[in-house]
Length: 165
Image 1: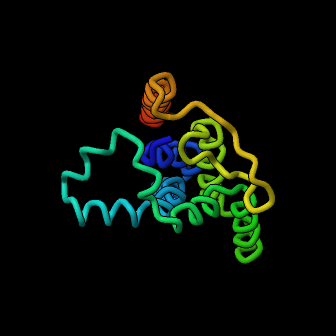
Image 2: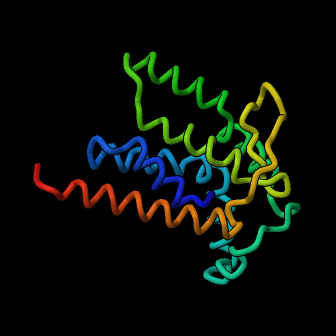
């Protein structure tokens, strides 16, 4: 799924307690992709400027993706790593940080919206290399379905909030 959608899903599902909670969940929902691909994206902009955006509609040549991206992707897209961090944060705080669940939601959605062809989700890493051959989020059925569902849910959420009690 695209990074903005991950943030919007995280904010809607786990950040409705307050504005701060929303933006925390939004940021955490985008974090796995930012940590994995952010440096490559920033470097592409630095080297190619705005021309970099011309190639964003197509998967990049896998040989041009540095090895560290794959390592970071494994760690940031693992339910095992997520569970350990969630548990550690809960232990330290004495209560769960619910917005952190946006990370888990990110992984759960990616399991089924990434194909074997490009960055399948290593959700059991480092315990197992099993991956699901899902329908890529760029598939029009997934992409437009996601956009329509997000628009409908956000409209419902904001319209519901504006009604007097």
